[in-house]
Length: 318
Length: 303
Image (cartoon, rainbow over all chains, first blue to last red; front, side, top):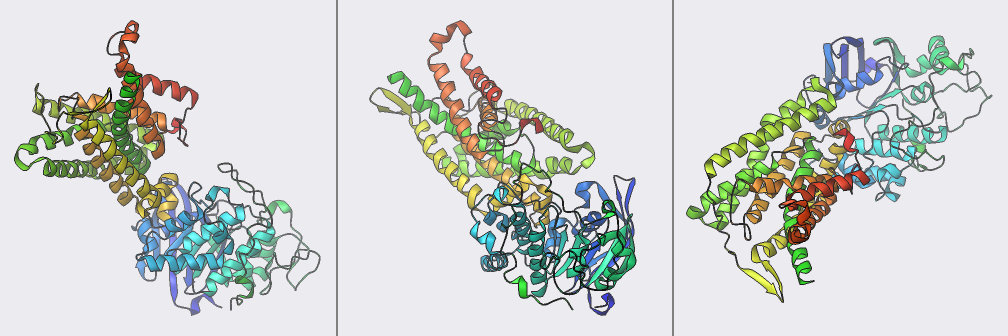
């Protein structure tokens, strides 16, 4: 449970990042993720969450950013100076915010694109079968153009595409963004299932309730710094996190059991979590409509089902 | 009617060759966001290599070497010039595309000038083994060169479209054309995708050169590059980011051009040599109606 007790897979030390030579986005972020862990990274808009992931996955340069100080290691290998496509080959895959599926490609072609770094036809089709098993809905829609999928399906596709190279670690940037609560539950279940199959996960979220419920440890970023860190259950129970990131009185605080969307029973407090009311304006759990990108259809509640047929009985993280 | 059919068949043949060139232009644009106006001079260079080698190594070997060296030249240009400028983020999107495009224009002038000097005022022959004979079907005549051009272009274009649709390279190319950053996050190495695109485009241009310099054209002259230029309006009217568009655009330009030349006596009031302007007029009209071209999905404003 304690972050320090497992062999470290990803190590981020005192990382500093500057955009366009002048804007300092990270001012010293330290984080480590052990093999097999799910680690949440929380924080408000502009706290540096996405920047952290970009630095790890080697895409900072495409946004005019640069690592100016600090250490970045994955399984002992130095990440600084490696291109994004090379980092994928180390077994570290970043699923970017906003899904970013290839809309003009079919579902199957999106998955092929995800497996482009894998050598061997057999390995690729194994990976694809695994993704279809995890998200049976994608198998049903394999020949559809990805732009026609619902928001939830697109998120499944984005995650499934990331899994195609059989990574050891998955970086997920706001997978709940713009999805209905029910669909978020499916995604959360899928993340647990993926983790149960041995993939470490770094989960960046504004939806703190979901993130804390399925992670073992969490880091809170504020203005480019790690302001809080610790086991997720402790953070979820702490006054400060509850007040600032979980908010909403009357909502059951996420405990070790149950996903927020599964037994969503407002007015039925589940445990002794502090229940200070907070103004909705400060709530970080955004449940907003999907971003209007390229005229994507809005996610229909109920589609994108089936994500968690396997995930439902996935073991809880220890 | 006979004239019409004859013009149609010849137009389709010329259009098929344009389609070969336009396809290369389109995949280069998709793979590296460069409008390669040096494409015509690459073609000229391919033709020159073939013409010089034919006497010593024979036609087949000369074509193989010409195609290979044009393909290689294209990759070298991409690696040594365009990808370096492309990596320079200082310019930003539009400025960068503009800079790269102007670079190709400059390069085109350099290569063409050198080729004109080498070729001189004469006409070099590529010595196509099918000669200058013609096939007659009733009153409709078409040279063997143009018949073979149709067949070869059809095979190459089909193979190419199949690769684009089904091969790993095709998927990688389409993915990075749509979202380069995410493609990189999926482990797609854009420089490899792009290098292969330039390689194929160069090879297609050299193949086109073989037919552009064949009968009824007397042989290789520097002006061949001007003829090849008609492939640009073909690519643009078809939709700059669409391979289907390149094919259809090539055929449209070829047929319209042949018609305008064939019926030029009826168009005398427009002055002689009007046929050469026709592809561009067709392009203008089509772009007015469909700014992204017939099959294009991206707004041309981005260019």
